[in-house]
Image (cartoon, rainbow, N blue to C red; front, side, top):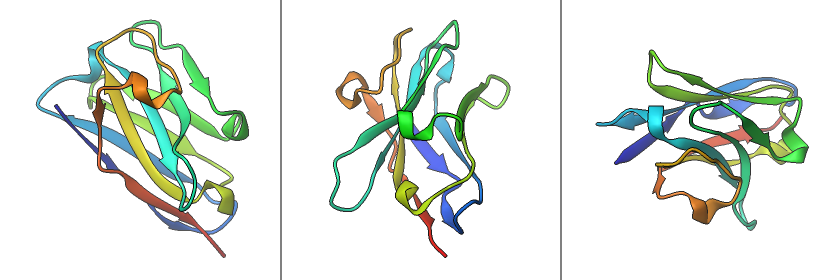
Length: 123
């Protein structure tokens, strides 16, 4: 089971980015998916996640209203739309998956992880 993130880059404060998480060799339909990030010198934190099935979502308080997680069943991807980015959002972003219905912002819940994509917000 492999996951690959894409869409990271360098943007200015206030701009947007859309990250994508794509699996290799399986479909995400049966998986709960989470997005995490880790900034230099900081612990990894859960940013958002989406349940498998009823599509319930959870968000880190600091990204509520700015980030949106969504599934695309046709493309077999899970995206994280990030708006109004700030320098505090700078981090490596990872997607993670677990064959389960429930999602959580707790990293150890997940079994499979991607390699990460760098997001840098700077003027």
